[in-house]
Image (tube, rainbow, N blue to C red; front, side, top):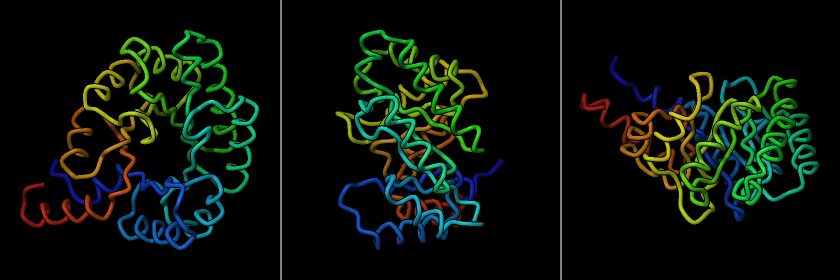
Amino acid sequence: MKLTPADIAAMLDHSTLQPFLTEEEIRHGCEVALKYHTASVCARPCDVPILAQMLRGSGVKVCTVIGFPHGAHETAIKVAEAELALAEGCEELDMVINIGRMKRGDEDYVRNEIRLISDKAHAAGAIVKVIIETCYLTDEQKKRACELSEEAGADFVKTSTGYGSAGCTIDDLKLMRAAVSAKVRVKGSGGIRDLDTVLAARAAGADRCGVSATEKIMAEAEARYAAGTL
């Protein structure tokens, strides 16, 4: 089936996570997402009330990050952060695992933290994407992090925060897709700035891509669709 720009937009979590963004820029990000009807806007926790107000009834999901960007918050803080976000209208939570615990092999800790947040989210009708921060893990650790995420009830596994030493790679997306069953989806994030990379991620098994270059990507998608080359 031929791809349309709407298919591309439905893959995009429009990211507004940079620490320097103003309220006006967050609102502009919501307007961009509404224009193209992206899957979500993924914003900083303090911005959830803005998203909840601007996106209400649109079908564009309200998304925020938990334990971002280092994953090293105490579990109780991550859970509290998730609870507040959900109470404020968040529909998707992108949580960062405790990377140091994962590298050390403390799988029970990692699994339990994901489960606690997933249970809170699911009780509120929301979903969880688990950021494993691939740049710091070996391939075996990436595989195990994905498996632990599925065991704990996560809905997605996600490559990166975009604030680590490297971002998304196609090889990592393929590895992650192979590590989980069909009921767990895969999200690429970090350094995805053009349509070709989104299409490559899609071909590798990604269902979502976290991007801040939404306008550029959608302009490329619309131009190619008009030319019959999408």
